[in-house]
Length: 240
Length: 82
Image (cartoon, rainbow over all chains, first blue to last red; front, side, top):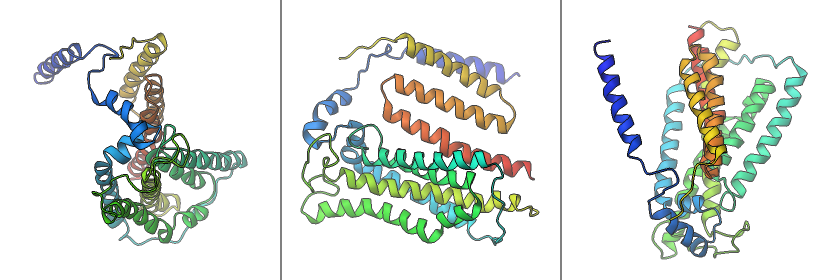
């Protein structure tokens, strides 16, 4: 208490000071937001300026972020895959209602996820969000159907290559610009297209899809490694 | 420069986020905390949405309703079976 109360007072004071010093609500002072809203549509033909920033103006940073995800997934797989694995599988869920609702939900979520990816550079969405939703939809199969169906869908022979293709695809798109005589990742290939349609944004849609593959495969690898390691032994009744 | 003011809907959801965060901090049971954190994430999603940031709202939604609860549930299951 002797330490906690003074620490709380100091921290609280600093917090209040910082909050009082913030710009008023709605008074945005950074110039870049306005600038990008002006130039993104004419320059890049993407109607979703956020995606234009993430996959084009700031595309090199996003490449690094994608490799952070790849590194994290690789690390988890390296740590957890070395263990021996039982072939026992858990029984499916007994309730028919849960099964039916879950499967319908999985289908609906898959469609929403694919839509978020496909139109990520036209309307709000993009490879990251859509990819996670797609992964969540496939994960619904595990929650609602039986583990055998899940293991079939989350097979390492499918997910590992997809993760690699997604991550490498981003680099290949960058190199394609380099080979064509532009700096790395320059958005000059495939023409500008018609803004507001799927044929727009140049290389943006391709980067979008490669990120979607990398993210959905990465999330599913994480899920399935955690499940195999922690949940399945418990569900199968094995002593830990 | 565009100057916006806080409309009642935004103020309401901002207040709900404050309540949600307090409830989340006061929840002690890990399993219940997982569910409460999902609801809190959903409130934050609504907040970002009414503050005209649909992209951030989508990211918040997928992280708080798909990614984070699964990791938490793994941890809860693990610790309960120890």
